[in-house]
Image 1 (cartoon, rainbow over the protein chains, first blue to last red):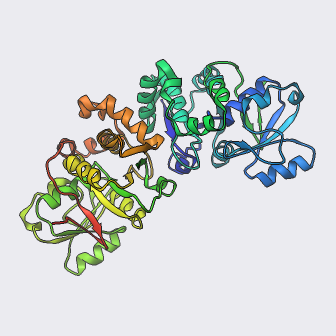
Image 2 (image 1 turned 30 degrees about the vertical axis):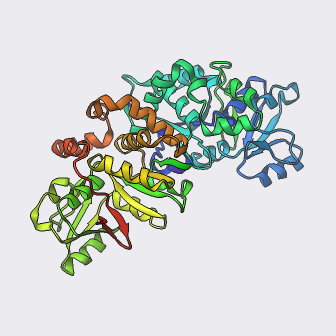
Length: 236
Length: 236
């Protein structure tokens, strides 16, 4: 008997806060897809920070630092939140500092919860298997776009709800039921379902179509990144 | 060329705020359904207030006052937010003070917008006709439940989006597209679609099944209540 709930924005997190829940942070385009890619490529840890200044300060101390705002790499940084920035041997075994428009903020609002893990289509089955095994309450926290609802994060939430709902996860919020409806409609062609999403159009205008295709691939890795203290790591 | 957007909670209103928009406040179970019913039954105006104390103070000055919290009439009041409380000749021509858990709060967060009107299934076509005629940006503001997303308000939003989308209303938010998906799935049997909604279960536990059926009826009135100063009125 566990709860299965979805918050459509970090700004709705307070209304779903549950100290017993595992929170899955979701930012499909692109922070959580990039984080999964980085761990698949052997990064040691990722340090999420809220502000560009914080990332800059750590960069000045010698850390590899990544910063994205408005979908683009911030001036003065070499990495942003494109997954392709993390398919690179130079990050293997390293600690990387990361700040993004929406994804890192979602991590911070939930930091007092029982546990925070990182979800994306790239590690979809690994996340679902982990949650089924833990049997704790689950809160799927969509990063959205600057406080707004977005389609891709909620579609992913629906895919997870669809996998989990059953005897154990039997107490669904209205938001969880809503995402299930999306997923039922969108699952046969996710790419087509998202064709009109505002964020997809934003990325397309930035010539990031390749990133979109990459982020919508299922099960490319088995990593389940988890927040431990101030760092995201993968349990061995 | 107008925007058509949906905010799933009064707490998301700041991210959709648009001073040029007509805001449609939606609280299907039951505040906005009750307000439409009251005007259909000849009430002169409704004064929304945020707090029970405010309603009490105006009641002490001689106003008819209604107060609902947790789905029930607050002690010391004769009226709550059941539409059936407003099918009553004694309110004809009167001013009624109203405070509810979610609906009146939604009116207050949007009070600086261009215009606020009241939507429910009961005045669905009248609201759509009005918006089509005005051709202004539209923000459908779901009252939700204590900050959370709910199914019935977003389903109604989807019904409106479905009616309006086209050459004039051509700039849809992701949230508007999402409600369209719900509506496509739910429209053939709204009652069945909402069978598992949390609020519906809450009302059912309070023996308010009759209210639910009433609130899901389409086009029972042509009134479009509008906020003018601190009062909801119907333009003649």
